[in-house]
Length: 173
Length: 312
Image (tube, rainbow over all chains, first blue to last red; front, side, top):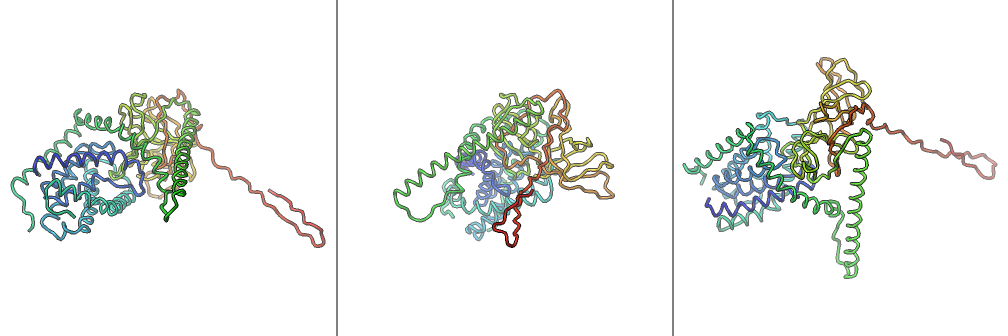
């Protein structure tokens, strides 16, 4: 990823982070709500190469770690996001059946959100954090999957447009 | 074509992973710079969150009522716009009234116990995607709030101040899975440890297995040294179920918190507690059923008009 692309994509993620912290956390949505930064980062990764995916995960993860609601040490979400974004980018890279189909990207993002939260939970357990009841975990994971499946199709077009402009690719979803 | 990767790409990923592990290690070792990063971010975010709260709170209530139906006349549109404006004003008033009601009840509770409190508005509710239960309030160290202070609502315990910034504070809710508090049963004075479960119900683990706990028992905070993190006597919740497994080492009970964490608008932070323990003075009174008057009509054959008799 060129320095220009990196600099251009940074304000987008900072903006999403601010929007998440200032507005989405106010909504008090049912079923635990959603994390817009997580969804945008995974869609971004799904449209990118694995290296860019990992770098995107690193940037988004730092943002999520800086959020006051993050319970773990700084780097907890970053590690999860690097792995999740790399995996999503790796699965989609070079396969037009996945990358060219919005439904597949939505599916990949939804699985990525649930998967990254599960990995976050496992890492948290290893670091000695409390995770609550199994029922609550299942409820939050199901809620995240539900909200991601609703939100990601709504923002996919915009994210795809911005991605194609920043990285100079010829087509957008 | 499947991705095979190259040396440069692998090197980048290794560098990112090593950097992340380095950050985790530094944070777990308590390096000041890392703590400062989060504090700085929160200080910078507080005005944005306050703005977000100001923008979202009227719309959160109002937008659900707005429907777009059919084509309308210009005059009708004008009247609708005026009506919406009035409804928005009314809803703002209702929001203010609800906050005033919450503030009154929390002041009543704090006043009964003799706590010195600082009131604050809830400006953000933490996302539960990280499996935590937190809220952010609009008062911080500049208002005398510090970490490990008890937070109350009009109904009882809300949580504890986890982080205090200049103009805002992060409150760990009692429902958070990592939340633990020493509690006692009102009346019997038996003690135990109550822990959050991520929902509105907590689990009370009694320290003495011979203790008997009953459904409906009120649970109060036992209090900490110098009232931090918990002041004594704060109502926490009510026992809704008891686990009486014969082989269990300790007895456990399900406790429903008095506070409804999803509707918190105004809370109070106890900045200094009372010299004396309020004991059971803050236990909410049990609701008394109101007698419903019934009317019985006796019809007597041959009578001119039946006279209704009111009985209780």
